[in-house]
Length: 341
Image (cartoon, rainbow, N blue to C red):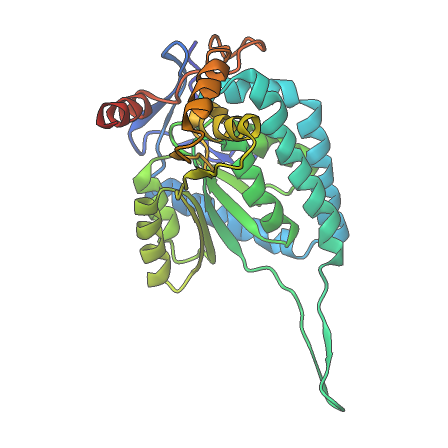
């Protein structure tokens, strides 16, 4: 199954890349089948996307907060209505078990839109009494925001970044990971259907070079990245060169420490959740588990017993609890860690 995106300038806030950059594929990790193919955006497409966002910002920033909230809440409703369709797409793109994506991905995204859709009318300024004279604050949108997502929770990250930015009246360009490029496109369509003006939320597909062009663009006001520390260093440097605000959520995982007075069942359950959820591809992964020597034997025995019960299989089968790793590169990395261990 191979779906080639239509080449055009702008479709509902989704930019097709025509022939600018190299072609890349979205691959279903369970079978290695290519399910979509597209091209990475380069300077021409990035410039068009930013210009579109600038125009969209003029309209959206002038839209009353009540109306902005209404659009986001409608988007939440559509996300819930199409949860299964979006969950299946997320499973195809990431390989995560459908059992998980049905409850953890688009569903949590809908909750985020609901939250900020309800919150934004209350985010008013303040009157500050200075003992005779007074000051006041007024909340205003920043402008055009770049958001760069990761591959482990594609639609959730897109929504969690979009909801607060859009609620506050900003326009946004989102670059999903080239490993998982698909669900953000559906989100763009849903936002348009919910009433978001065209140009306010744009998806720009691409690779690291696409990200560099976006972050370094002179008409960008804010940058947000979810990704690795090396990528974060590059993004921070590019954003800093233009004195643009930057928010970075970077890979930083911590070990679990199990003391001798811990409940063994609870400790094993926590260790399994931290290491096996999303096939271990999660920001809160418990990379190591340090267990007190006095309970180490019992802990290992219980862990092995529970691990053998994990149902590994076709991720589209709701009975499966664990699917494949997201890519061959990630597979090779995990095997290299096992060899080091």
